Picture 1 (tube, rainbow, N blue to C red):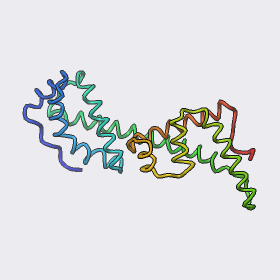
Picture 2 (picture 1 turned 90 degrees about the vertical axis):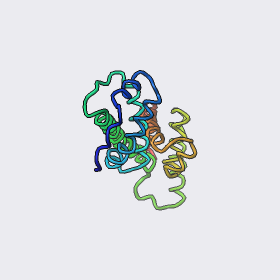
Picture 3 (picture 1 turned 135 degrees about the vertical axis):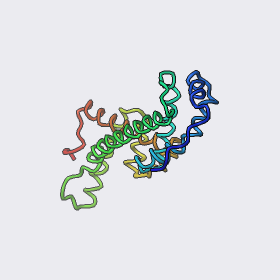
Length: 199
């Protein structure tokens, strides 16, 4: 997993300055420990460098805000940063699990065609009917969420393409997709609609 980085010279004084809002002091802490947090903590936990980069950013944003309540302990701030990073990674992994379940629920709706339909014309009519019902539900959700669902799940575009189209990072796209699937399901419930069955 790699060795712990060497503590900074006068680290305690740097931490105190950063806690008081000194951004330059905080940048020194970031430069000293970000690479180790990224390479030895986040990448192994998440298995994805894009997710690890997002988590790294969130870790240090949280750290900057939480430094005022940080209590100095030897051998320095690195163990505290490591705990923050692990918590951020666990949050992302939990969100990813929920996202997959919600996405699966959405896909069940999208792919819910009658069993045994072999007539191509009949199948096309079913698809058009299903698409119309999906659009009714999408009209009720946030337009940005609706766009994400159309791009990623109806058009089947890659995460990278979707992120580029929406001008967001991959990690942000995943969070938005999770929220979009949740909003879609809530819109279905609100309208009393099931896209399964009446097709």
